[in-house]
Amino acid sequence: MRYKDRVFAYSILLTILVLTIPVTSYQEESDTNENTRSTPAEKTVRIIGAQENPVSPDAVYIRTFDKVTFVNIDGSNGGTNHKVMSVKTGTTEFDGNFYSGLIRAGDTFQITLDEPGIYEYFDPTFPSIRGTIHVV
Image (cartoon, rainbow, N blue to C red):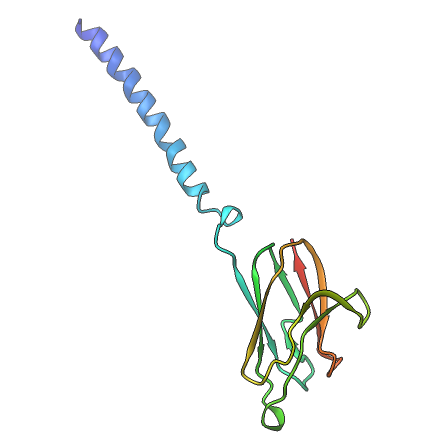
């Protein structure tokens, strides 16, 4: 093989190599994109009780299969028990999506929602404790 032919062949090989490196790097980076995550996220809602904002946050935004954990941190009167019940929009009527039962002070209740939508909830014992979960 002549010198000119070898230089030409190496030039083509080097060009191909240089062009494939950015493509490979981009693919590896996009695999870590949050939109393709395989591990569900978790959000926490704190039940605070008799305050201006009895739950924090009162609106949670998650994706399907993410977890929402309700934590009862209401320490009033030695610790107040709470419940969390999903309701039909704008009502106090149970919609069947989730119900915690009694959550004692210091305890938690966790849910996973697998359908997109807006889920309203409230505490049937303390109706001012309300919030929404937005699932996309």
